[in-house]
Image (cartoon, rainbow, N blue to C red):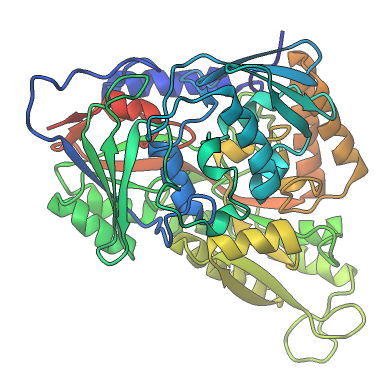
Length: 540
């Protein structure tokens, strides 16, 4: 039997889904929407976000890509309420995990009236691999994707890849008739660039007012969404966004792959009409990622020394406002059912200093800061996401902790685009602070391998034969018992080699106005903007 998802996702997520569906009124996946035919009033929803879009090209702009996936573009596969990768636009089969047959199972239509066909499916896979750096990694084993007829595509891989279907769930289907002549999709500005086949039709982006609108697609194959228009309102700060929530200008807030910054929760608890969805986070809220192919970050003892310098309890208090726990050296959060208990991370500044001394990182010139073993000045540069205020605050706390053991630190702010370019392409960095998402955790070989392996996106730039051997076996095995064993082996490597240091394990905290909206469904990938929300939402 083909492996449709990774071990342990289903068992955990089904509990979340059941709770979400019961408490928030969600309906089963792929159910049609309630009819609005008896009502003449336009049902409009406004949602606030600090995930600011700079240009409405979904290939170029990271956050536009997220909103496009939520509203106007459909995926080939989806993650259901049990955590399984399931058919959405296509079904699939394979006999050897190398050659895959994809079959369109929906009568979907592009927003301009053109039918969706197998040509679009084959084109999208090929085009994204060639034109989009992210999909170049997601589809790195794809050799070809060819249509057989209007409904069928054959995808050939260079090696066995039992989890190929996870990439399908990340694939935003693109219309061939619009994009096939576009050489550089990131610069394409045609008026049809946001035509999709999803539940909403793109209504426009007004950068002056900071709004983006979407209109219900009445011809959507699942039926018409339960809301007629959705307006996304962009806010420059969390404070201004939450003020809008308190005033009722927006019904909910949104942040991709996370909830609200926990520091804002206590004052919101005093608002009688503000309610919360609180769920486990299957990503790691923030880690320090070492460029393990650059000295001295390639030294296991150096990485371990840094781990002992950090005040994890302070991060929980001042960054997560108590909605978190101290992680273990195994990196994988305990929300996953293949989690294995490893030693908890602890602060031990004297041990950290002693380990650095033994490596030769001492103060040779008596200026108060540690130097390289050859006597030259040492500065640890820490890249941090400037588009996420929480990350910058955390970086300053990490800097404080490292400076307390006399390591000179320079925090380098970078927006999401710059961060991705540096960590994924140029690799010109020492260390970085960033989160992982649920999606990133299950991509590639699962268990966060997307973020570690230097042969993929590889923020940690791990070029370790032992690590690569485990990943390669994961990519080809379909035996669930063996998969669990391999996940346990990865956690042992994470614990002993410390390619990255998890800083805390937190919660997803999603606020909304209970007097304005009900029926929100939390999707592990896209939060409350996942497709099921649009067919269960109730406006009050």
